[in-house]
Amino acid sequence: MEIEILDFYPVNKIEETGIVGNLRVKLPDVGIQLLGILVTRRKSTWHFILPSKRGTHHETKKTVQYPLIVFDDKDKQTDLVTSIKAAGIPFIEAYLKDRIGSKALSPALPEKQASNPVKTVQARSVSKFAKR
Image 1 (cartoon, rainbow, N blue to C red):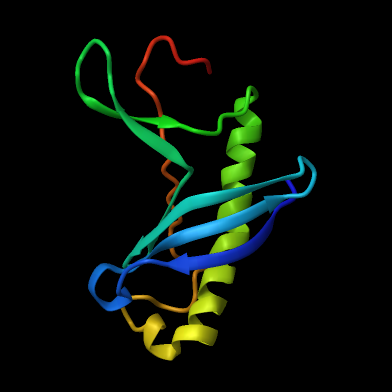
Image 2: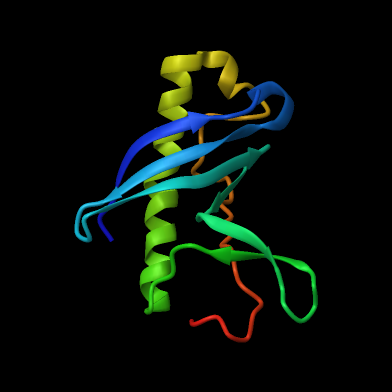
């Protein structure tokens, strides 16, 4: 899936909590922009969470996350997240080097990602009424 990373917006202090911010992504084939893709990094593990809304499950009364964007085809959903990871990690690292400085990529946040695992977390609904 073709994507363009438009910007990264850091929202917390990097030294205390790892990288925390939001990505803005454009899908030129579809003609939309996705805002609010949460990105976190703790040590060498990256997490990308698609926009979601918290709510209360009507039966269990537990807090759940309902995705705001879901493709009918699960392969497209997986392809989107994979594309965001592939383009997002280098974009965020370049952003941090340019705007925050080399301190942002300290030993706790190494520059090379080739051998580091990338973990994707997608918001999922537990409601039996949610369309998949």
